[in-house]
Image (tube, rainbow, N blue to C red; front, side, top):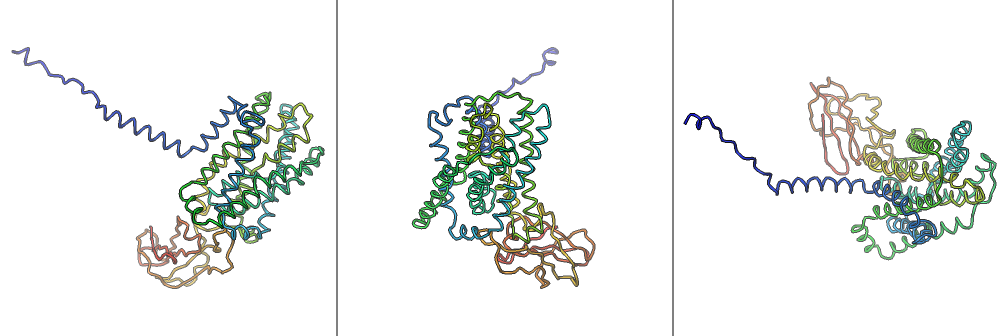
Length: 471
């Protein structure tokens, strides 16, 4: 009995219920699926490059699917047909008249970036470890005009001024036919006639004609087009077309079997990524620089269009021009590599800009980027219950162009504030960053000064009539 009383009963482990394991597996699968859905474009680009390396004959020019027609023409036609279906005709014509904006973008893309690129190329030529053909290819890449399709798609998805991007895509490639060969003759001493007729013909077929057709269809069948926009995500279709274009580009690249040492092309890869980041920062800084904003009338959507158009380079003119200038050169594949690398970089990195740019465009209107607070100016006689209202610099219509109606900078009429206790001393100013797009549309943001033991902050949304306060 003693021994029996000393024994302890140990419960057998209970197997985990199958339903619990299935539930956990479903949770993990859902998490993976959500990540894929969120980053599908970048994953698609990576897959396209890998697939092109594995089977280059599939999507190359003259390959299994005749990609020089089905993709090079077909994908671009679809992109601009969708733009024609979604853009308002009045907004498009309004943007065309903003010549100062177009001149600003073309100056960055066809004057400023080529000069900077040539400076880096000259530094490469002085290095004994760098390939001279790669340096020449960098000059060719940097003298190209803005890309035709990527800038339009990314500008739209970032909340930018799509008509501005579209007009500059067309304008830049027309001007680039003449300007790019001139820069190459000046920088490299290479002379050759750009394929003017071929480029203009390609632009007429792939850009202008689909755009006009889309506008006509939108005018004749407005309701069906509107329903189609609600049911079909035009933006994702545009992204899919860009993936196909990148795939076609890398199929051609891998088919050429370019042989180059890693010590040459790896530094070029990082250099061009750095150049794209530099040009992006330069474009956004110039577009949000207060003196330029006042002269050119830029707003946030315009700044996004400047970034996307000013920092990107096209393959559509670059590859034919390289063929004309270096067609008999044994290293034509090496010379074309910098343009291909830059094109891939602008697609991959540009897609990462979209989410942050969209947040910025939808955020508070104050000009400099990023805007952490409002400038309040001289408070003057602002007693308790009075407000200092700092509004957006200007209103904008749906096309992104400035309206002619002036916006008052200050107002001192009393409003009913929402009281929020804060530890600020009496008479201090509570500065608050407003998240939302109401201020950008010209609606007022009110800052209340005064109080016995605390400052009060409120936001007045004039057109909506709602008020919200925070500490």
